[in-house]
Amino acid sequence: MTYNTYFFLGLLMCAFCKVHSQVGINTTSPRKALEVAGNMKISDSIEIYEINALKDLDTSTFLIQDNQQFFKTLDVSNPTGTALGYIQVYLIENPNLDWVLDFDTRVNANDYVLNTISAHFNRELIMNTNQGRNSSIPYTSAFIKNGTWHIIADYPSANNKNPSEIGTWTITTLIYSKDLSKQFGTVNIPMNNGSNGSASTPIIN
Image 1 (cartoon, rainbow, N blue to C red):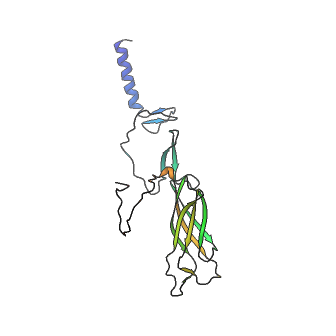
Image 2 (cartoon, helix red, strand yellow):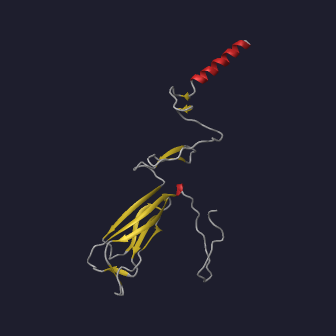
Image 3 (cartoon, one colour):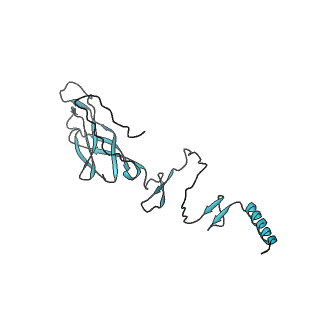
């Protein structure tokens, strides 16, 4: 080709870019400056210069990378889909007075972490010494047994005022996947027979 031919092709490409400011790959109607309809592999980094703030009515979506290096969307607004965390309420009816010694949630302890975040019992209580009412603090905790999360709940120094009444515990739990949280493990804190202590280093700076 001659110089004039190259020059003409260059002008034609510039004119095309001005008219068609949006480029599509595998699509004839790109919605952005560049839209790729299909798989894309990037061997270097991507820089994002503008991120719009999330509004209250927007659907929250996260990107998750699996163990095969693929990215997947995580739509937490989908009630039946996977989420970052789960809030589960257990209504434990008719225990022995107010005592729940071992309730098996059957949630896999290898894959999930379960915390009890609130608990209350719906019957009037009386202290075991018969010297007061409703003055005992409820005790509830989650623990691992045989690979699943279990719950214990009790008023240690109180019982139903009327032993014949059927009570119900309402226990709210927070469950989240270990894949979506950082597990620091166990930190041993020697107190040396004292009542004050301090961590040697903070787990988060």
